[in-house]
Image (cartoon, rainbow, N blue to C red; front, side, top):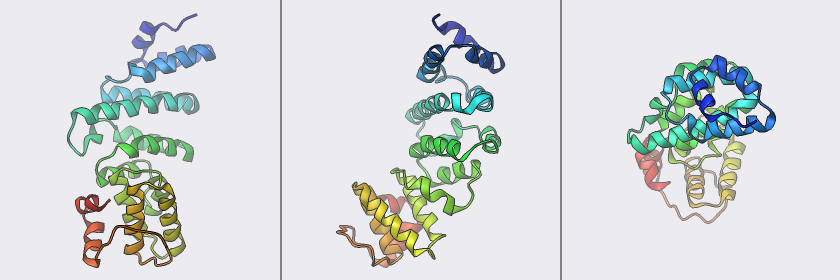
Amino acid sequence: MLVDRRRLRELISEPDTLVPYLNGLTNSQFRVASQMLAGGMLDDMPSKVFWQLFSRLFIADRKAYLGTLLKALATRIENQKAIDADENFLNHVVDDEILSVLSDEMTDVDRKKILLTILPTLRSPEDVNHIFNLLHLREASQWIPYLLQMQNPASAFMLLKALRYVEHDRSLLIRTCHFLMKKGDGHSFNLASIIRLSFALDEVRGIFSLVLQPYQLARIEQNFEVFVQYY
């Protein structure tokens, strides 16, 4: 039996009916339905309706539905970025109340998947801070493993800020520099250089092209726009 695309589209706005329908599909049919949902059906829904559906499916079976929902969310974010020049475009694609409530139900794996979907798209440090708070990660030290995976300027800037809260842990600072240097790209190497100089990590050896004065380092850490010039 083929998946009825029209029926599936009709049920999107009726989560309490959609869930039993999806649960009644065979494994192969469910994969097809998931591809349909992630491949465009959820793109133009009003944000509130999307997040109500997100909540219902997540609670029903996060293992089955989270991947599909995050693919759809990533597309919605990119679509919004294309039409919204506002740095705080995240306000238009994320429902703060629903995501905060769902955070109480999340495992660490769930949080990681959501963060790895959202963080790379963010344009401002304020949005990075906001999304961590929504997911109830309020200690800067908790952010570091996620931020290390990112390469967008907003996340890189917040990594530098987060490290200031753990500057007593010199071993962590050195490992962070080495991790960034092993990534091998110019942005990561520049960030490693900034961290090395900011925290006086003379133990970190390498060929760094970025030469900065103390007054520049202070401005880089305090001002995102200045940071971007050197990142």
